[in-house]
Amino acid sequence: MSSTAPGKVVSAPTPPGITPRLTAVLAVACGAIISNIYYAQPLVAPISRSLHMPVRLSGLVVTLSQLGFGAGLLLVVPLADLLENRRLVIVMLAVTCLGLAGVALSGSTDTFLLAAFVVGLGSIAAQVLVPLAAHLAPDDQRGRVIGNVMGGLIGGIMLARPLASLLAASFGWRTVFEVSCVGMMVLAVVLRRVLPVRDPGLDHQDHRPRYGQLLASMLRMLRLRTLQRRIAYQMLAFAAFNLFWTAIPLMLAERFGLTQRGIALFALAGAGGTLAAPLAGRLADRGLTRQLTLMVPVMMAACFLTTRWAAGAGSLLVLVAASVILDGCVQINQVTSQRVIYALQPQARGRINGIYMAMMFVGGACGSSLGTVTEADGGWALTALAGAGLGLLAFALVLTERASVPRRP
Image (cartoon, rainbow, N blue to C red; front, top):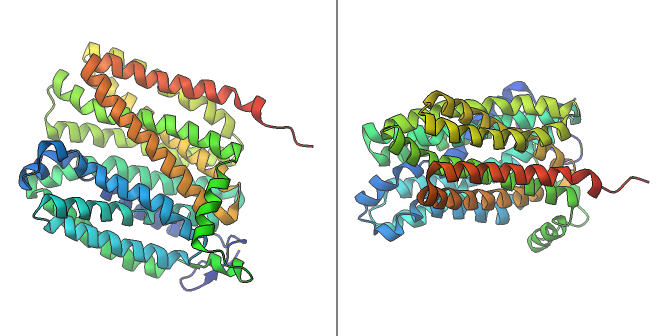
């Protein structure tokens, strides 16, 4: 197994191995980077007041960064299959820093929204690192490595909201983005030192594909039945995840009287579900992918039904436990799915990851909208039933998988 020392050029076909230290760095890096598109979620009100933003535009505080991230998934992440990965990550971190500085210094709505889009665009650096980690890992350890790295990424998503709330409550909302900007600069220096140099272009010396050809190939990849199914499973899981975390703060404030700080602590406790990712990776490496795929939607449906009872009974502790299990289920499905899809076409992991994650975020956006509507129309009882329905729909879809897979000759 060859070294992954900085400066060593790694071509696409042969995984050079990955050390526990590098895995830990990638996990922390992914979590820190992805947090940038979630910091604004709990800060919509203070940001809108500070910038005198019209109420009808306040939702764009969060939406613009997510749109930028989605654009990056489809237009930038595929470049990981063509350009040297370390350089691409550093460039996108520089873009992120530019956007974060713009957000922190913005004095008008237009400036803020433009900078928020840039933050989202640059934050796709995390989605370049994930397939890079999969490439560096040997086949028999790929699930474990992906699980560890995704644990860091989802941990960043879960921790971003409470940390932003706590920091903004003490120092103001601009401090959140200033601190993150400095953090991204430090991270760029660290990654520049520890990441191996992987140039996929070495595999295309005879015919280096053009950017347009790269994007066109993504449409052909959508014909892969396995990729279609894994996208569907994770879209439903992430929709349920976003439905829960969009509606639960409203219910906690109304029924339990929690303040913004209390809701932040609830979200912090729910982040315990990130511990499921490394375990899921190890189990997937042992050939238990289908069992995990069947288990996840059933447990998600059970969690939502449990929260329906807990909300009526006033049991905050049960709600916390259910949120941890629900987050763990989403992690398990994510890790097992990525292990499967990264094995489909190893030379196209960047493009496959871009397609997969873009569709996942579409599902998440639909879940957020559904959470808002159900909480407004029927309270938590209707929201919990909607979440359980998403889980049962995913379970029904998984049950059809065996019949649809063609037999090998």
